[in-house]
Amino acid sequence: MPEQSWASSPATRRAMQGNRSRDTTPELALRRALHAKGLRYRVCAQPLPNLRRKIDIVFRPARVAVEVYGCFWHGCPQHHRQPTANNKYWREKIIRNMDRDKRTRQALEDAGWLLIVVWEHEDVNLALHRIVESVRTRRGFTALEG
Image (cartoon, rainbow, N blue to C red; front, side, top):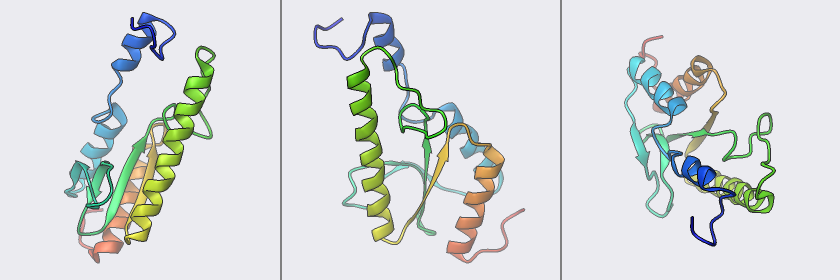
């Protein structure tokens, strides 16, 4: 393990390196449900040319962006628990993530986009309903299957 590692042990380092930034289980479940409803979207796409950030699910014509947030990584108000090992590092990391999330939301809203955040613990069907309704409204479609 490198001397300056953020991990408290080699096992922790391996576990954290194994975390995915895309195609997570909650994200895949949501994408399958959206696809089954007949919605088509871009995955891990950059919605704005000047936004150096990729969004999990992007509906370009409707200008709807969907982010699937993990409770740990994005500081879920209901489920986030600060680790006891290497506490200072993780507290600062989560704060940086949350600040980046705020900047991303502001940039999208300033450009006329709607950002929908789905937390990993949310019911897929409830999130699906929110997204379908938003895409329908913003695209003017009413013919999507219910």
